[in-house]
Length: 239
Image (cartoon, rainbow, N blue to C red; front, side):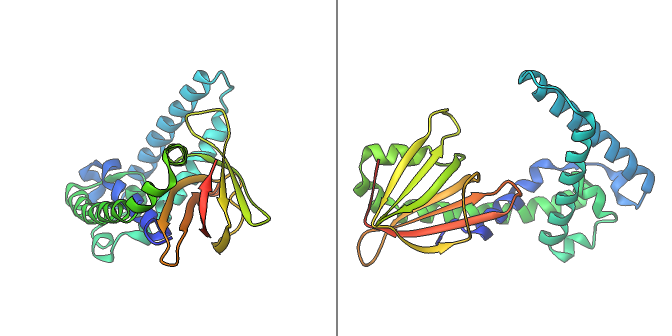
């Protein structure tokens, strides 16, 4: 992918970090008691959220499972914060565990907000660049295919398989229970991180190729939160 790379997706997650922060000056000192209290509060809030969703879906609620899910989410947040915030911000954080629970001092929150703002502007600039670069491809593929492509984002991928010269891409749109299919004509695989079956589409790219035809790419999020990318050179797309 040229534009919506794994790095781009990671930057979008960083850009959203500031919207999840709560300010509390108790985070200015290292306190095991404050961490344990905050963890319990956030765990309880998560359990209530899961219970409400389970009730709406007429499913049973498993409190222990919710606690395990929260613990795993917290662990992922902790690693994400450590890996993606610059050292000059982390040096101002007394307990990174508190930050992973979405709480920071006013000063740290302001630093993170500025950092996230830079990432957000970068992501938006890449999106504008793609929109400009994809105009010619959008004009060539036709209205019906273009409409189908719009339902790709967030869709669950059923399969993407080579069938002779073509590749058949089957997916379940997020807003529809009915599966859709796209035929990638004269498809030549140029990049692959493995099977996309069961993964959710984050972004797709459709660009005109210099030698004719198109470049078609998919960035998808696997069930284990890993990112996968598949790219093809194709002569066209049909339904």
